[in-house]
Length: 177
Image 1 (spheres, one colour):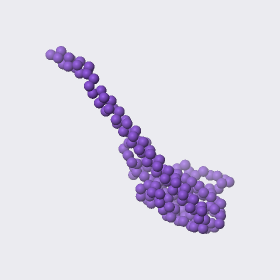
Image 2 (cartoon, rainbow, N blue to C red):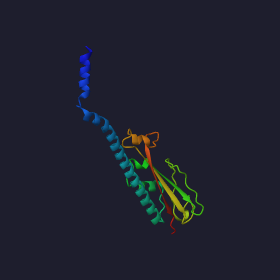
Image 3 (cartoon, one colour):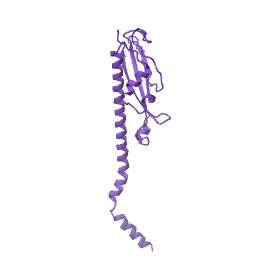
Image 4 (tube, rainbow, N blue to C red):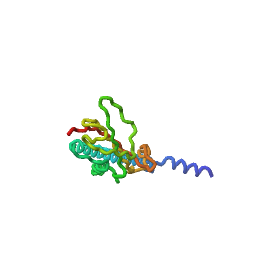
């Protein structure tokens, strides 16, 4: 009685049918994870480049229009013209801080992703000082990862809502009139 069962098991062990299926079943999930991570990194890199470009163009406008006094909302709207992230007006935070170039104090390493609005008023009404002051402008944009369940998305620092943040900064000198 035991002999026919052992014979069938031995024949089953010698067959090589389905070897490709086993390799396929093992490798396809690994390849899919890598492809999803590559798409996620690509989208994140694209959003970060657009955010940097938008911030640089906004700072350029502020530097060249020394007589203008844009508000925090206007600056935010200028950055959001580039469609940095979905629902940009609610998901973008701008933080401005003057820095003394002769007595340098670095800004905190953590970006503030809450609204810390500060009015930009160039020239003599500039609330942080006089002409030729160095101002650091930092931006934090929140966005929802494209594939939140992947290994790469779980490695990102997410907030309570499951949103990741993109951060960048730039500096400009307040031009004199």
